[in-house]
Amino acid sequence: MPRSSSPYRSSIAFGPGPLSQTLKALIGANVAVYLLQWVAGEMFGMNLAWTFGLIPYAVVQQLRVWQLVTYMFLHGGFMHLLFNMLALWMFGTDLERTWGTRYFLKFYFLTGIGAAILTIVFSLLPSTVSGDLYKIPIIGASGAIYGLLLGYALYFPERPILIFLFPVPAKYAVMIIGAIAFFSGDSNGIANTTHLGGLLVGYLLLKGARFHPLAEAKYWYLRWKMARTRRKFGVYEGGRTGDWKRRVH
Image: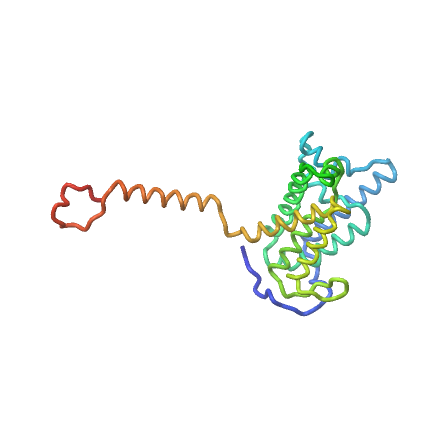
């Protein structure tokens, strides 16, 4: 996975630069779906969240697996959409430049889907909050956005992020935001469970990028095979007296 050539740039500036075609497409899709939500609700009385939002019960019991993806494009209001898309631009631009478009899209959707899966797992736990979570629609790109925030903190740890109007290095800002999400879980368990899921999946993807289970399994298999061969065949230097009856490999 590529690394940033300048991970410690610390100048404070509003905005990372112009939108790439990828970010334009993602933001455009979110805006289009939000407008579709508004039209469906205002004109036809339809709440698309019950069909395309993430409902753990529907995924587990009715196998509506498309909700693992579609929930990311629905939003609960204009401000919800605005802040998510602003964060997508602010943090996604530099990450796409660093990673390239292909890995950026892979990371974005894997963190969003992973956050949804962890939310479903949490909803199955025996607690009041998780029980309420099981049959309520969850919407928003926040799981993926929190994954991007974590990635930004790992790649640009010293860059300032404004927290309550104070510039805080990204590595500490993510800790603060994660703590807020964790400790406010009782009051807003739906959103914050997904937020924390995005942080966790993003961390595992980035920290585990160099770990390849198949390659590791192949390595340990070859080590076992070599050790087994050594036990089967004695290895000696040629010409030693009394070794002519021993098998040599």
